[in-house]
Image (cartoon, rainbow, N blue to C red; front, side):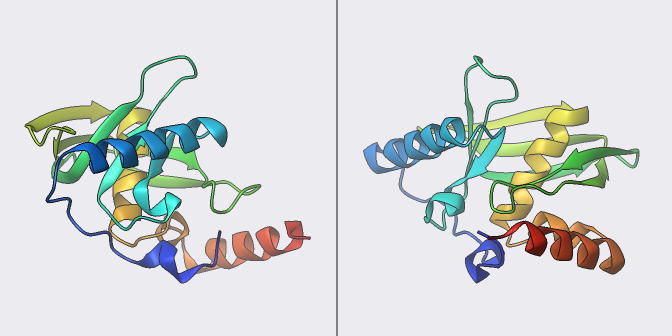
Amino acid sequence: MFPDPRLRRPAAAVSEFGPDLARLASDVADTLGAVAAIGLTAPHVGELQRVVVTRLEPGTETRVYVNPVVSWASAELAAHEEGSVSMPGVRETITRPERVRVGFQTLAGEPREEELAGFPAAVLLHEIDQLDGIFWIDRLSRLKRDRLVKKYGKLQP
């Protein structure tokens, strides 16, 4: 939970593909469902590895991205409301590229590339930021970030 310093630690690239990685992805997916999130990373479950799991709508299949890297981002921007399971109760609008191309690997280590636009792009960019040690509020102006942190503090018991 925010402000835990682990939220700002970069995750290590996955180099071993096998049952341990599959279990980690399953754990992240289970946690994603339990906390009703749309995207989650391995660092959220205590493993500093470059694994992202997303489920954009309830009842749909999860998507797993291992070692995701943005290879291209559009100049056009889009604003979306974002939040984090590590900082519940607060949300703010973040501006990110409208479209991105992301290279990643499957759980079997197979290389893939995917282009995303709109909200799905924002979700994956948010999670890749997390893997890079960039917490979502770091994308806000200092004033907005300070206000949001203060609001979050008031929500804590």
